[in-house]
Structure formats: structure tokens, C-alpha cells
Image (cartoon, rainbow, N blue to C red):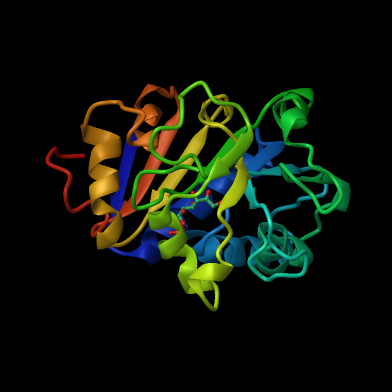
Length: 241
Ligand code: F6R
């Protein structure tokens, strides 16, 4: 694992954006995307760079990690709507180059891994991490060899995500997510995390044993992963990086 620790979130995001721009201009034709608050700055900067014509999405395919089940199609927290709002509507991506594990009309997640393979795999996967170490919606206990599947959200994750909804009852209980194996199959991964609350999961992911109880710990076995942290998220690490 390559570990990059920055004093501020701004510096961390600047590093990530440089990496993404470099890949999109060279090797990356298939980009894996995630939702959540961690990504908003990066997506906003990608929009600006696209408007300035410094990056182009015309030939890029995107695969999102996950999508809620049992959420109204027009709900702002439906991940497709989130991505439309914070990225897709403002960049020159082709609509038929955007992939989600479930869409409005199709419950097609069993084919998702095959579709990714048809496009020769994900060149760069952007990833966040949950407070419990989840990646995508692979909660603790998810088998490391899982493919895209239907997942139940833990109560902890639902409570964390409650901030995006009016009430806990509104937070979906299920989602479809790329599996851990699906994520591990990406050729390169950049995972980023900010803030003190993520520090225990980051410590577990980087320095503790690899265990299904902390899904992100499997990334220790990925050959090309960069972890980008602000100093708060890195604050429990005991080694020098
Ligand atoms: C969502 C996803 C999740 C988030 C994680 C962090 O697509 O994959 O694993 O990355 O829950 O979310 P934030 O960024 O809101 O802290």
C-alpha cells in the first residue's frame, strides 16, 4: 500500500485530482466511482477541469460501486441521482457509458461483474471507507470472494447515513454493491478518508490483521492501492509513512 498523508483535506484532494487527471489522460478508460461526502470536492474539481477542457469524459466508461434498493426513483439520495447532481450532468460523459449495479428498470446486478469484464476491467477505482471499515456496502463479515450482490446495511451504517435523510426510517435497509472481489479486481485503487472519526478504521485497514471483520483490510493484498489521508484520519497510525 502506498500511504500519502497530508496536513489538510484540500491538499489531499489536490493530490487525488492530479492522479485522476493523469490517469484519465493516459491509461484510464474505465473509472470506478463512489458516492458520499468524501467525494464532493473531487467531483466538483473534475467538473471544472472538464469545462476548462483539461480532461475529457467522452470515451470514459464509469461503474459506480453501489446503489440503494427500495428508495424512490426521484429521491436525492438515490446514488444515480447523487452522481447526476454532483458529476454526470456537468461533464461530457455519454449517458450509455454510465453503469450502476441496478437501474430504474433493471435489477441487473448479477451481470455487473461480467459487464465490467466486457470493458476489460476497471482501470482506476475511487473508494471511500465507512467507520466500520466497509468498502462499497460490503459490511463487516462480507466474504472476501464476493461478487456484486444484494447487501443488508448495518444499523451503524444506516445511522451514519441518516444525515442525508429526514429520518432514520427513510434510510434504506438494503443496497446492491460491487463485491469485495469485484473491487479487488480493479487494476488500481485510490482510497481516501478524512477526519478523526475514520481513524480507527484506517488504522485497522493499514496496520492490523487482514480480516473479514474489517473489509477494507483486504486492500493490503492489492498490488496497486494508494491510501490518501488527512492528518486526522491518519492519527492512530503507529508507523512512519
Ligand atoms: C458509497 C460507498 C461507501 C462510502 C463510505 C464513506 O458509494 O461506497 O462505502 O464510500 O460510506 O462515505 P462518506 O464519504 O460519506 O464518509
